[in-house]
Length: 542
Image 1 (cartoon, helix red, strand yellow):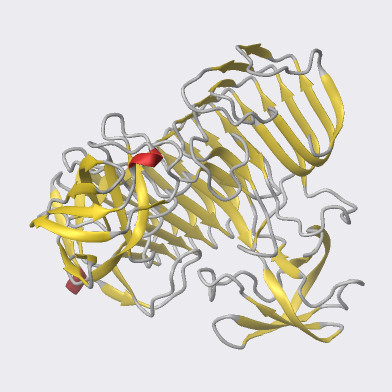
Image 2: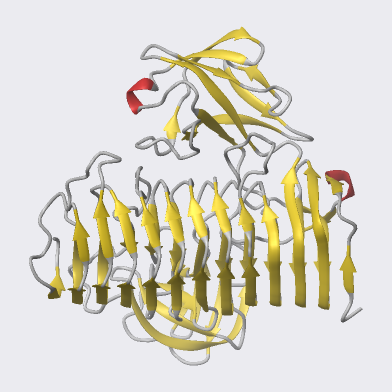
């Protein structure tokens, strides 16, 4: 009933796949199984509080633990989610030399068998062959071993004894040592830990996702989300170094406010937070008002990107320039990947097949404040939204890739939302960018994908201010920016160290940027000359 409050007795609660409710729907940025077995379907609720009182919810098998759908005012508090057998596995390296390595895998924690000469991991109701590539963590401090990125470790395997294997592969040349931890990645990303779908005014407070088969939290087509103290990190006592199989939190086609404060994120296979919209490619112009549109990326299909009565915005894919808006008069779903859309009036001039459209009304403002992000793969955070973005008082520490990425494209991922108001202030950036991943050209990367940058007449991102931050870093670029109008790097403190190998690149790499200002920064131990005085102007290729 509306206004209800459910307080659980603190304990460990087990959920099995056999007891889950099978629901069919599409989830953004995930694989698309026919069924999602949902353990806790919180659907069609109003003003409900569920308080776990510090309980652990332990899941068995392939399940989607929590779904909040078609609800308003749901508040979820004081609980942690984990899997009895996780959807990643790990082993400790016992010997590493140029000819081979030896690895020990706990068969009870990570059941497995050898089939066709390689590892196949098994869980409750599932069996997945290992990919042969994953993340290697330093066994002493939990950081990702520098320079290893997505490490390939597959080779000819010999069984020394059950649970101990010798593999002909040279990991020593990558700086990997005995005692380090291999995270074996297997399976895809069918189910997140928590899903918000058409949910309004939703709150998570002191909720922890220790492991998931995909994202930790995936919110789509939802409005006004408030998160305090979200945790995504390995559960103490498990010995695990990894947490979620992809992003810790991911917000696709949401609007209103997203406020995420006081969280701790560690061991994820992707970003702590990612906010974006989804654009669809124009496959056919049937007439001047009718378009056939296509979801392009295979992990983002079928859910409502746009509906009749809403506005869409056109994107010229070649130059990634954002164009005019039109309202949708009617639409028809042709199949999972295609829509037939009729506009209220003729489309703008110059729109061609291969261009794209994005939802004009489904973007959110973001506050990401007071969080700690560390020891994770790829990036610390990713934002692609035209509304205000505030990134402040966070600690980005030992992230293998960039700490912050502002992206956008209509050519690959089809994730859109040109940034227009970004403030990055009072954060600590410490020893990030120890490996290379997609779009990770600097600690702060502003990297829209523009196929024809020279032919572009406008700019994609605008008004990015990086102020009053502390950078403790080895010699890597601080800022990489493409197609940005208004970039300010001011009053930051930058101290260089020798903790990792130098990139020997400039601190700022700018490609087709204007109104750039570098001012009032304090720099210590710079490995190469900085500007001798404050500078401003345009930046191109240097």
